Length: 287
Ligand code: 13P
Image (cartoon, rainbow, N blue to C red):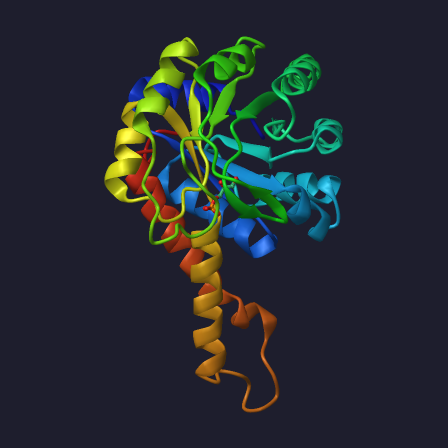
């Protein structure tokens, strides 16, 4: 059964580790992530962007697929199905469709509007037992057509949003989606510490997990980060494994590729990547 992320992230914060959010795009990714979480005895968060939800035929299809897999694969570790960077409308749709958790990203609105919309959605989500993540200070880079400028959050604004009762808070600290540029100056830990101090111990989220050096990940966890999002790294290993398979020409002697065999190396590559991240984040055996 799907669970909200509240308990798993509070436990992570108290135990000084982080739960990984891995974005899903199709059946293979979902199955690879769920099986790895079970093998690692780790809690896990499946992230779904609105674009990925559309690609998978809509949020109801995603809910049906994930619930089916939990049952048929015998998954017993805590799993949250979480909307990633939701719009106001998308967040409402996921709450209706049966997600166990949502993120409303109002970071591009003026703070008053972010507060008003977040407040309304907190009440709606909580009335159905669903957890909610909010964001202050846009995460830079591009994700699914949403472009952010890599802002650093204002700790006072973080407090205003945290005080609305959100379960977990994403604060921009110089992190960006996708691969970091050569001249990236790293995460701003001073701001992270100030955000944590201002927000009364709420678990924090680190977006843009791809390419952040291991020591920075560990420092972020020590400063209150309890959820880390990873997407691009899974895309890269999936694409590379598939490319190698095709280049090796492992088709049926010129009769074409069996799609199940074609996607198997990418599936294995995602499993290995997710395991590596769960070990780094410290969530192995924390289910
Ligand atoms: P990356 O694609 O940089 O790993 O970021 C993922 C993310 O933050 C999803 O919200």
